[in-house]
Length: 218
Image (tube, rainbow, N blue to C red; front, side, top):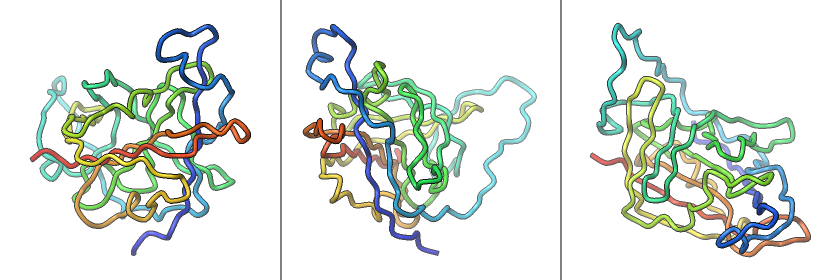
C-alpha cells in the first residue's frame, strides 16, 4: 500500500553556548523550538520484516557488505568519518500531536514507522538536531558533507551498511518533497535531514531544510 501523503516541518534546533567562539558564534543565540519533524499525518509503516539476528555463540564480528545482501536491520549507530559523526541511532515515531518524536541533541532519530536501512526498496529516514539545549547536535556539520562522502549504519550485532552521498538539497520547508523522502518503493536510499537556511527569530525556526541522500555501496 503506498504511503499516505505527509506534510513535514523540520523545525530549527540551534542554540549556541554562551560565550562560544569560532563557528559556534555564528549561530543564533535563541532557544529553538523543541520539535524536529512535524507530520500532519503519519507516514504509513513499511511491511513488517523480522530483522533479529540468531543468538551469537561468539563475540560478533563487524562485517561490511551491501544493503541488499544484509537485508533490513535495526540501526544502532551512524558514522560519517568526513564530518566526525559517531552517534547512536534511536527509533522515533509520532507524538500525539502528529510531530515526530525528538531524539536527544547528540542522537540521531530513525523514523521507525517507515523504511529500515537495508530494505531492498524505499527511503530510510534519519533526522537529527544541528544544536539544541546548549549542546552541539549530531548533524551540526551535515551542511558541509560533500557528495561522494561515505556513511555507515550499523546494528547492535556489528553488521554494517555502507552508503555514498550522491545528492544534496537545501529546500524551503514548505517545498520539502515529503512523498519522495519517505517513499517505500523504488531504489534503496538513506536520507539524512536537518535544519538550515535563514533563522526566523519570531518563530525560532530555520526556513530551510538540509537533505542529503545516499545510495548503498555495492
